[in-house]
Image (cartoon, rainbow, N blue to C red):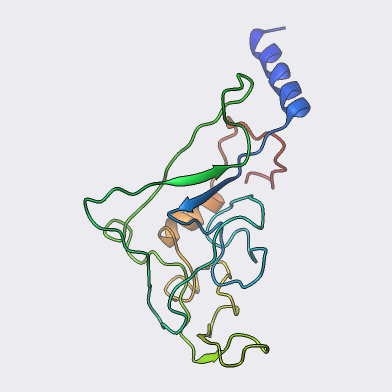
Length: 193
C-alpha cells in the first residue's frame, strides 16, 4: 500500500476514534452565530448569513435601539484604538499533540463591502410580547418577526434581510464545490456543502 493510502486510513481511523468539531463563538466583538432579534435561547436559522454548523445556543442576538427603523445602530470603535478580540473555541486546540487548529479572522468594513447589514426592521412599533405590552419594538414587514430569513435574489436590496457579503459572493458560495481537502471530522455534510 502507498504511504498516501496508509496515511488516509490512519487519519480516517483517528477521526472516527477521537472525533472533533470546530465550533467558535465570538465574544468581542460579539458574534451573531446567525442570530438577529430572537428572544429565545436557540437561534432560528443556522444558515441566515453563513453555514455556521455551530451549536444553536451560541452567539449573541442583536441589541440596541429597539425603536430604530431602516438603519444600523452598530457598535462603534475609534480609529487608532486597540480592539481586543475574544472567542471561545469549543474543540480541538491546545497543547495536546493530537489536536490541530487554525484560526482565521475574516472581517470587512462598509468602505470595501457596501450594504453590509444585520437586517433592520422597517415596520411600526408594536408590543414585543403579550406579557409586556408597554415594551414596544420596531417590526419587520417583509421578513419574519425576528428578521432571520435567509436573503434571496428577490430580497437582496431589502434592508430587512441581513447581508455580510455582497449577494453575488453569497450565492456563488452556495453553488461552489467545497474544498474536499479540508478535515471534516464528524461533520455530516450535505452533498458538497
